[in-house]
Image: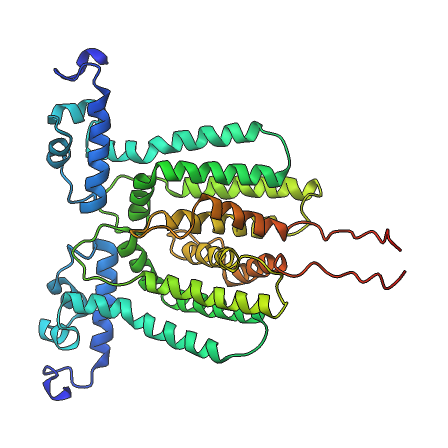
Length: 210
Length: 210
C-alpha cells in the first residue's frame, strides 16, 4: 500500500500522528458530530487525501483513536498473565500498569468518557465496556487465586474485585478533571494496599508467650 | 408571579414537569447544543411562553435540571449531620441514601456525566464537582470520627475516604450504562462493609485462656 501514499507524505508518519492529535483535540473540544474532515486536516496542516490514505474517513480516524490503546492494554494483560507471584503483588502491578497507561493517554481516556456518557453523535460503535470488563475480570481472577492460596481470607471475589476496581476508577477519573487531580499513582497504590489489608486472614496470634 | 402565568397553564405544574422531562430526554439523546426551545416545548406539548414562564430560557431549564437534586442532596447531608451513632453505621447510611437518590435520578445523573465529561456545548457553568466534593468531605469527616473513637484503626483518613467513595462511584456508574447494572444497592452495601472490615482495629486477642 505504500505505493499509494499521497505525494509529499512518503514515509511521513508524523503527518499521521498530527492527524490523530488534531482529531483528538477537535472531537474533545467541539464534539464528534460537529467536527469535519476539513477542520481535522487544516489543524494537522495536511491535505484531505492524507487523512483518507491513513484512516479512510472521519469514522476511521475516530476508531483508530479508540482502538490503538486497546492493543497495548491487551498486550499488557497477556504479559501480566504470564507473571507469577502472590495475588496481592500481581493485583498492585496490574492496576498500577493500567493506571500508567491512562496517564500516558489522558486525552484519549477523556474522549472515551465523553463518547461513552455523552449523546451518540452518530459515531461508529465502539465497545468501551471491553476495557472495563477486562479489568474487572483480571482483578477477580487474581482475587480468586489469592483466596485459593490462603493469601486472602475467603469471601465474595466479585465484591473484592469491585472494591479494588472502584479505587482504580476513582483515581483514573481524578486525572480527567480540569483541576489538578487529588489522587496520584502513589495515592492509588496506598488505597489498594489499604483495601487488601482487609482481605488478609485474621492474624493467627499463636499464644506463644503463655 | 402567579398572575403572569400564561393562559391555559394556571396551576398546571404538570406542564412544568413535562418540560423538565422533555428537556432531559432531548439534552441526553441529542446533546445540549443542538436541542432547541422549539423542540422542548413540542415534546412537552406546551407553547414557548410556558417554558419562558417557568424557566426563562433553555439555559434556565438546564440549570433547573442540574440544581434541583442538589437541594435534596444538601438537605440529606444536613439531616445526616444531626445523626449520632458509630462512624461505620453513619457511613453506610450516608452512602446508601445518596445511592438511592441516584437511583431515583438516573436520567439526571447520566446527563451530569455527559455534561461533565463531554464537550462544553455552550451550556451555562454548573459546579458538578460540588456533589462529589461534598460526598468525599462528609465521608472523610465520618472516617476521622471513627478513628478518634477507636472504631477504626488509625490511618490516612483521605485514603480511607477514597476507598469508600471509589466503591460508591463504581456502583453509581454501573447504573448509568445501557446494559443491566452488575452492582445493585445490596452489592454496594456489601462492598462498603468489606472495605471497612479492613479499617477495624486488629482484634486484641487477650490471652485470656492461658
